[in-house]
Length: 390
Image (spheres, rainbow, N blue to C red):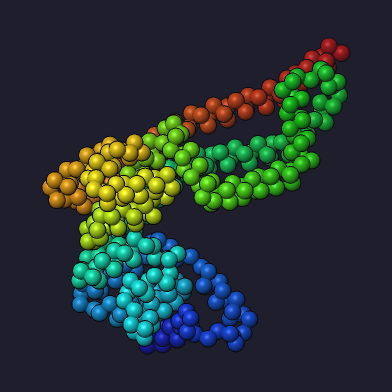
């Protein structure tokens, strides 16, 4: 037991403590700088953040001072980058007098603006404990939505990838062996399907490098275009118009709006500020513009539910439930219930995607198999007839 304790103490001492902007690392050996670079650019997962805020809320609600709670969680943190961020936050709070929310602002890629705003609202209203719980809960909800979407898309992506790989293998390794056999035929006597298959196979063998380069280059060009303001708006607008997909996207956006708006308002943030933050949370830029238009109308004096109802991008139900919430003074709770209801609907829609895509994939696979079978077997039968007749 004593030996295990000593090993644990030794391990803890070996973890280098780094305070960003304070620790002087200029004269470190190159291997240490390389290690620090890898640590400083490692990701902090949403799940790690969710656990952190849950644990922080538990400690604070137990009467532990927030700085002490941060020290405890930093000591336990396995993600070294996250640990360094927490150590720096603690330093800023103790040495510079920063509030917790102000210390978080230094890391916008880790702690999102809504999370910081909710914590700030808690500091102002004296409800830090409750708001920490709200942040943890919201992160968990966002993780859950992302996981469900990825799970639903996993099947079609896997199947399509398998088809592409299998087709490539057939074109490179299988078809060339038959081409040697078909060389005895005059090109004019070969079926059109066989000539197409041979032509595609020749192209893949000779220009495989071009196909790979074009695919990778095209993907990077598309991603860079989508990051531009114009490209993002055009792509987001296109997604919202796709048959079948647009309803799912709109429902997912409704979940995001209802859930996050509920959390922001429950945290004591004013409607106009909550709407502005909400616009930054929503991933679709067209929806962002629509939310900010709601904010503009609300500030001008239009009722909140009316502003939502007037824009066709929003589900009409959203305006209805906000109107009920306004009359009863329970907007946060009714929006949370709305998010839960729409989550059930989205789950059903995501399951239906697979049932819609599956027969399409089967038809494509069947068509490809029949085409290749005819292209390969028809000349073989003709060759057999020649041998038989001779």
